[in-house]
Every structure is written in C-alpha cells, then in structure tokens.
Amino acid sequence: MKKKIVFSFLIGALFVWLSVRGVKWNEVAETYRSVNWKPLIGLPFLFAISHLFRSRRWRLFLKPLKDIRVSDLFMINAVGFLFIHIFPLRLGEAVRPFLLKRSHGVPFSSGFATIVIERIFDGLVTALILGIGVFTLSKEQQESEMLRMGVQGMAWISFGIFFSALVFLFIAFFQRERALRLVTWSTAILPASWREKIVAMAGAFIEGLRSLPNLRSLFLILLESVGVWVVMIFSFWLIFRAFHLSLPWGSSFTVLGVTTVGMMLPAAPASVGTYHYFLQAGLALYGVVKSVQLAVSVFTHLASVLYVALAGFLCFPAVSISMDELISKVQEQQKTESS
Image 1 (tube, rainbow, N blue to C red):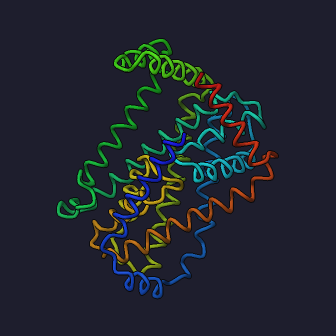
Image 2 (tube, rainbow, N blue to C red; image 1 turned 90 degrees about the vertical axis):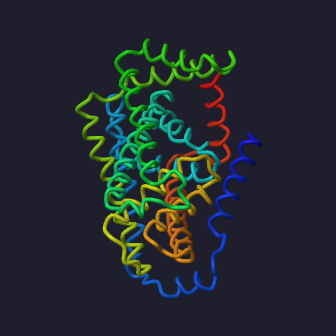
Image 3 (tube, rainbow, N blue to C red; image 1 turned 180 degrees about the vertical axis):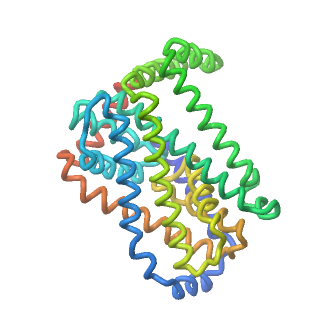
C-alpha cells in the first residue's frame, strides 16, 4: 500500500513539473484577472446534473437486483467519488459497492461488476467524444509535442481498449466458462500465485454479471452515458468562453476527450498533475499559450474537486457510517474479495 502511494505521488509530481515548466507566472495572473466569471456561476449545477445522469444510469444497472431510488444512489455516488479523489490509484472504487451492499443488500461482486461496466461505457463514450474532436482538427493540429502518440492515435488506442473490454463482457455475460478459460489463458505467463488470484477475482466478477440488465436496458444505459458527457462538454464550452478563448466548436470534445483519456493513467489523489497536463495538451492543439493552458487547467480541476468534496461531505451523513469505520470496512471487504 505504501509503495502504491509513493508511486502515485511521484507520478503526480512528474506531471505537475511538466505542466508548469516554462510557464510565465505574470501571464497566468493576468489571465485570471481578465476572466469573465458570470458564465461560471452555473458550473456546480452542471456538475450536479452530470452526477444525476450517473445515478439514473446506475439505477438501470441495479434494477434487476433491486429497484433503488435515484436519490439514494446519488448520495452513494457522491460519497464514492469523494473517496476516489482522496485515495491514490483510484483505490476508493470499492466504496460504492460496499455502501450499496451495506444499505441495500446488493452483493459486493454484483455492485462492483456494475461499476466496472459503468467505466467501460464511459470509456467508449469518451473515445467517441475524442474521435469527434479529432475529426474537426486539421492534420497539422493533430501533432503535438505534449502528445507523442498523436491525438488520433490516442483516440484509436482508447477505443480499442474499451471495445475489447466490451466484447469480453458480452462473452462473460453469455458464456461464463469460456470467459474464465480466456482469463486463465491470458494469465498463463504470470506466477502461479498471481494467476490464481486473478482467476478467482475474475470468477467473482463474472458471477456478478449474471444480475445485469438485458440488452434492451443497455441501450437506455448508453443514452444516460451520453447525457453524462454532453453536460461535461457544455461545461468545458462555458469555461472556454469565460477565459475568452475563441476556439472552434470541436475544441470542447477534443480537450475533454484528451483530458479524460489521460486521467486513466495511474495518478496521484484527485489526478493532480495528470489532469492538468492532459488538459493543457488538448488546448495546445489549438495554439493556446502555455500560461493560459495552465490557468484553465488549474481552475477547471479546482472547480471539479471542490464540487466533489462539497457533495461528498454533504451526502456523507446519509450513509450512516463514520469515515474511519468506512475506510476500515472497505479494506476488510477488499481483502475478503481478493482472498
């Protein structure tokens, strides 16, 4: 655990250094002085709407198991995202399925399975968003020193990863034994102890898939996923207007897509460093100067973190558990699931 924490902070420090290297701080200050703050008043409401879409989508996933009110899921989501931001390497992901099991009796493996699939849907929509943004860029704009693989390569790689994950999910959903054989085969080169643990975890995950909605419901889930990200695209558009950036309509797609895909890398708590670097990389594609890139990335990240913290702490009393007890119970649950 300590090694993971140290590793995450080292990654964050590296990307922070890359983000601020060569920045003219007087220009950053000037950028903030010229911001039009009026368009930004509605940002907290847009963040809340995005989280509402997430809660509605999660309800669709969970409906075959138990019909849970959207308001309950909104509060669990708020607390869960708070812990995801607190812990490095997204170790807080287990909080939501734990709270779901504790308050509504949904098996941990089933709850965790819905969250994994939620991430896959988000990944596919993000790849689509980035693809739309790339389509609006000229060939010259697609090359960037900050993105060595190129933004087009980034879009294809992310789509390939999440589409492959979706294919595996369909195999696991309809042919459990074949999916387990696939996991066993793909982990054959690993040490026996690692392989056994991975296969056991995969078995528990695949078992959790049995309670998922049918294919018709998955279409509604896709629509809710689009809703989550359309709201975020509009949020980026508002921020660009507030910072007086006259960028083409596709810029919100590109910058959001690059930022989100970049955040999938191992990162420090709250994705400090990686968030800033990749948002700046997206803006660099449009010729935005480094000082303005940094000003926008710091503001956007701070606004998001403040919303997550405020929503998480306001909703925390609803889960009826202390912070220390929640951390302890989640750690116990993770050990139980991985043993």
